[in-house]
Amino acid sequence: MAGTVVIKWGGGLITHKDQLCTVNLDVIRSLAEVCSKTSKKLVIVHGAGSFGHLKAKKFRLTEGRIPELNQDSAVMDVRNDMLELNSVVVRELRSFGLDVQSYSPHQWAKGTGAEFRGELPLHHGVTVVYGDVVDDEIKEFGILSGDDLMLRYSTEIADVERAVFAIGGVDGILRVPPSKAGPEDLIEIWTPDMSFEGEHSTEIDVTGGIGLKAARGAMIAAKGIDVVLINGEIPERVLDAIEGKSVIGTRIESGNC
Image 1: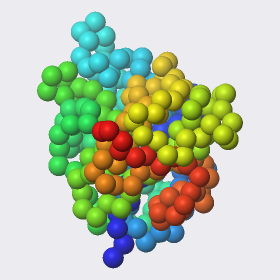
Image 2 (image 1 turned 30 degrees about the vertical axis):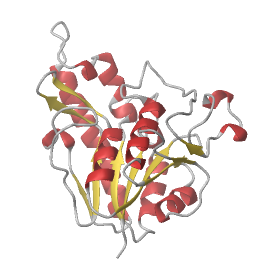
Image 3 (image 1 turned 90 degrees about the horizontal axis):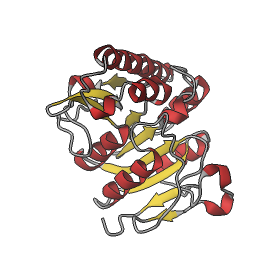
Image 4 (image 1 turned 90 degrees about the vertical axis):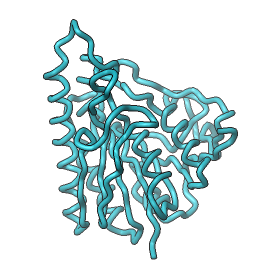
């Protein structure tokens, strides 16, 4: 029986991150086609990109309730925008004949960070979840990152073989920012005691960028699950990563986690 692969479609991969609520349909379609070519059971976690980060940053939603800001409409707007992005993801997956069910985190998850609460929903076909604005007992609301969803799905459900982070524009974790990197700067095997310089768009990103992916990846690896970061714009690599084949990218090991 085929095992389960938990795969993250990064927000910067499936949207144009600098253009409000703009999907990268070609990439979404190519990823959906890849998913139709595997016999693995899939859990897909997708990011927000321009459907979540821009408004969330402007209204400081990751900080929770701030009395002097009118955040209620922003919470609803981001949730609705994410439902719109999610509908595109689900539509494209179904267009390749996949049996897909999506579960909006604001309907079942509480709190943020690695220890957010809520029973993980799971479909017998392809399960889809995504980063979202969720209720929080202390802050009233906050941003639940897709990377934290990756952690819990990868380590808490049965028969997970590996976790794959498909990211946009780079081949994996690089020693220096992508704008300065050459092929020799790809870190093929990364552990938490190794430093690197990520490029974090502080004016856009609200969840932690490549650093959070690396941290959560190491926590997943500590549970004995294979973890790899790959360039999601190259379909062949995505399929090879899902199948557990050797692929250009970064393999994460637990190190001293």
